[in-house]
Length: 210
Image (cartoon, rainbow, N blue to C red; front, side, top):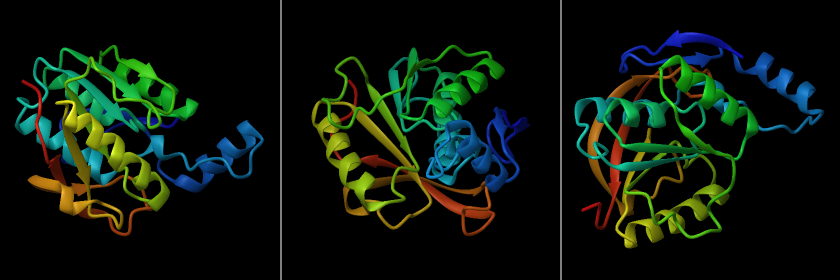
């Protein structure tokens, strides 16, 4: 696993992070025997997740005492931030087994115990025992965005609060979102087009938890 590092300009969370993407990606390809293995996104802190972590540190109320699901959790950054903000229960969801391993290690480094679901939820009904869904950095490709938004809208219609974090990627459904906060964040990967980015936290329009 990558080395344990403190995030710059973020809450005092330490994650197992990689310095470079290509050597780690190559190692994943070798480990899986798959030359088309997914990018190791779980080894970096992305702009949307950093914004959500900052937002919850500044204003814990959206998750405090609530049951939280972190969709597409990656490194587990948002899940850990939710626990630090006082969530009563946190579920981190990702389809990648390497992500599940990274979340477990990162949660352990922060002294947290997070329930990890390694599966695709987007064809199922949103869980009825969740109050808040966090969705950081899920708008980087069209096919995924086309699946994520209807699922989140079903969750919102069921009374689940949905918080979105993103630095303004192409497929972000801005017309459906209410901006809550803006942060300058320092990402940890050269895959972003610049080191410092402006990332926003939004609420999906609709009802939240009672």
